Amino acid sequence: MIHRPSSFALAMFLVAGSLVACSGEPQSLASYIAAICSTPFRAALEAEASYLSENVAAMTKMMIDMGIRPSGDVDADFVAMMVPHHQGAIEMAEAELRYGRNEQLRRMAQEIIVTQQQEIAAMRLAVGKAPTPDQTYASK
Image (cartoon, rainbow, N blue to C red):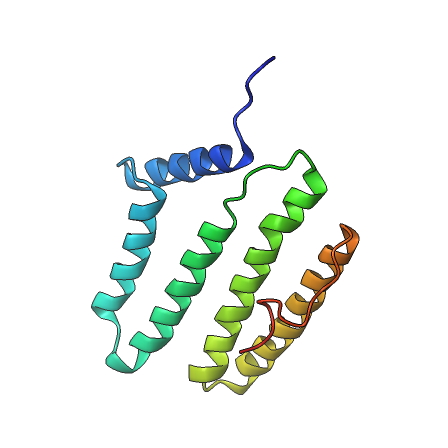
């Protein structure tokens, strides 16, 4: 039997490769997230810190939750990775609604929330999983 790396391991290898190519220094996903967390906050206005904090939390959760254990079913694995990706977009859009002032962007954020929720539901249905009332994509 040929040993094949898991999708998660491959994704992490590609992320690490991208980071090496971009920064010249090998980094882990944890150090990448730490860099995301610290860099914007150094220059951020105090009023923007809460917004940035929420976005970093959403992106960090998304990246962690996308690291699935392959099931052997490509379709189920696709959904398992895409749901957290869409949830991250929803949480980022919710932060825009809480802190943003641009009406055009606020409308877009509302549309993002609705369409991402619909896509999560459609993907779950496509693999035989009914959306439930307590799903994490419900607006908070």
